[in-house]
Image (cartoon, rainbow, N blue to C red; front, side):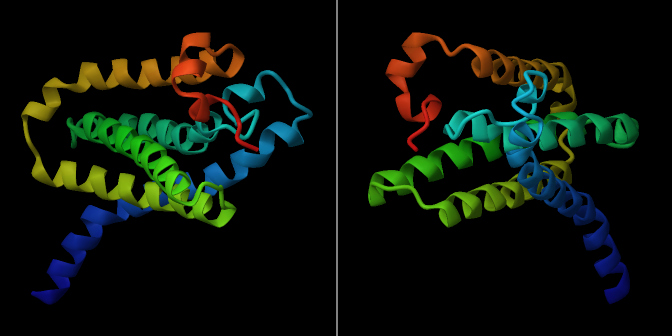
Length: 183
């Protein structure tokens, strides 16, 4: 009995562990790719081009996005709510990074690299937990939101690309710490 319980638990959370580790590893590598490429404009679509918080959100979003799209292709029939659950996890990871970064920056008044890295890794874990929790609920209403998941992911991708090349001036005035590098 204990063996089957462990197998069931591991089966449910194995994919979430892969998801979190994928975000951590790919995001860490993406941090350096833009410089390694000699500041290639195409690479800027996937990798941060400066030290702003917005650009560093790509470190989380890009691996999570590609993992989600690839995995959705394989599990769509068995888990029709997968895309919606993953979209919720991506949004929660992004929001976690933003809230935690500005909270600790507001308290300490200075950035700290190891805290930034910890927030990034913790956001990957939180995204994995959110995804797994959502899928364990197996709510049929979530299936209806599949088209919204596509819209949200496409909108996020569009914003990351657009704001890499041109940030609207009102956004810079409204949220300067998000788009302009503090360093």
